[in-house]
View (cartoon, rainbow, N blue to C red):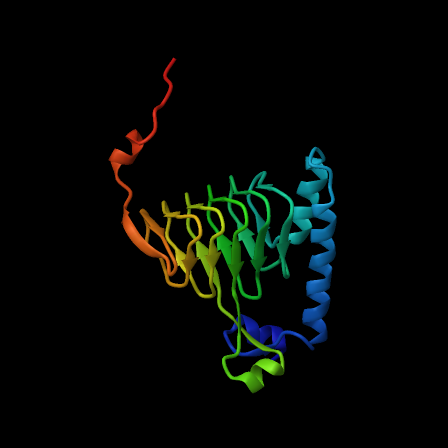
Length: 197
């Protein structure tokens, strides 16, 4: 089994010294560099580069530079996907975003974890566990989503949260560690005024 195959199957793997992995990361880093140095008005070039970076891409995503990921081809985004500045995705395992996902600035999605044993860790061994984000999810500023987490559809993750466990559908969750605060209800439709002119 190759080091990459180990990573995709949830085994400790060599992330630092394996040639195939290093080449894949370098390719993605070069593409992210090119994307991050595009003129903001050059949306055509941005979309072309995102098509080369990402594994699957819904229609017309908006990803605001700077944006970083490790491999890119392990990231899948649905339609109407939006990230604000400085989003990082460490996609050593699959990272899947549904439709209508909005991500605020300075968020990190990390499938990567290092070995707990110091000898294994010093040899460069890591573990990678997939992250899944459902449809219609809003993720606030400075959120960290950790390996193996699933965030349900129609959910809001509050700013500054560290999401280390699964979060169900249709809730507001926040904190460190992130916990469900309450369900989202029909009353939330009246939270903010709507101009009807």
